[in-house]
Image 1: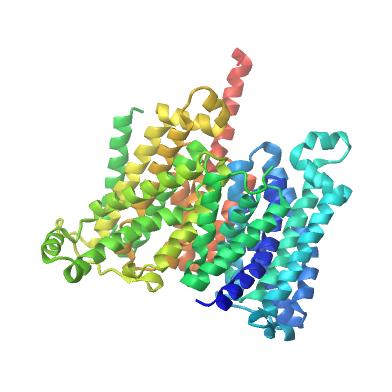
Image 2: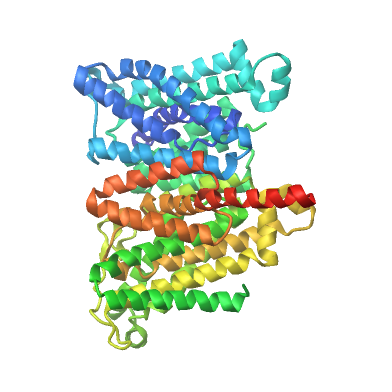
Length: 289
Length: 342
């Protein structure tokens, strides 16, 4: 194998890693900060993909723009689901078994509804720039990968800034550490958690639009992302956004190398090995607190 | 009820059910009944870990598929050995094979149990949610392995030709499979009830209620959890082992289907997770409901129905159908309590 091949595989891995970070950031917020194991997150991502597909094919809206527009309804949806979750589970201390079953059922419902509406065919979006590729010497940078990756990085930086500089953002970090101290500052933990969960689902909507720009989508591919996002979230260290980015890039590169050298059919196994190795060897993750 | 009496009763009920099916004589009833009874095994198995110990297994499809693919692999071994093994070995294999289904069930159970043990050993020391996520990922990875494994047909799948009758009393093959699955269901219910009322079961309950306290009180939590995962996984694998002979054609997408995981969770949750009766009740109602809905409406609609019922029960009736009766019971107790104090 040539050096050019290796470098191209590395570049593709880094780009796809940025995108993985965008899919995972929502999990990092809900699972890392709020301790809500939202396993339906990837299903929300796929729902976002299909919403972007509808807006693109029906009204002709640019997928990037529709991704931004989608954050609003997805945010509201997230707030709604947090309220249900709070009333049904968190309030009674039943997060474990029932909470997990709830999100699992939600994931299944989303997948089945998408199959009933759209079937199992692959769907994709169209935009003029998606078909061109930048060439830097021997390095190929397809725009359908480059643009979503850049947007993913922007999303990541924006959320990191929000969490570390604004009052609300810092309250989200605080609520994961000491909710009662938050109450003493007359901030209601429940409202902060609702805001955080809304943001997490909103990021899934945008990530979904990015996903369908990168590759054609069918309802069940969300499942491949479950292993991926939790592997990244755990490896990065729960509740550490920089850790999430590093872990996402690492997984992206390793997956890209695996599929370049051994064939794409083996790629899904990589994330699982990652996850198991992390859980066994270093459950706190790379940058865990 | 004493354990031997209960066991005998369970076996008698299973035998009576089989006799009743034979008396009705409708072949479709056996086909549909097999699936429902298979879910009794799966739901009971899931509940041994989920309901008794509080650890959620999302990988039911994977454990089930391990059993099913163990059967496929062994089934293919006979032809494979003729061409690839030394003649002496091939001759031995030709004598032993095809293996009787009860043996295949034991092998499938053993393999699934070992996988449960390994998974548990790696993840059960952490918080329960990590175990749940790991089982979810396990399904994806095992499916990847099978898709890439040409010997069992890869993503194309494998066809298993089922003989029309068994050598045993010349019984119709579907009747035979149904009888075996009924027996397996009775055995898993007996195991579940046995665990419930043993020291092992009390240990599991203490883990479910407060693992830290259990550990502090000297309960060997890791060992109990591992045993529990192995038993639960083994039963799921046993339910999967006869599956290739039932469907005749096995391919990864349907064998690893998420529907097994959803049903495995939904059935105990709908019935009630506290004891052996809940999964039985849940699997009989939901299993029959699915059979009816997929015939009368569509198979997608029946899937959607299960998902909606699961979410509705988890949110609105967290103690399942048996919880409805619990509401009646404390009232009576309450009346006594006002008289005699509590």
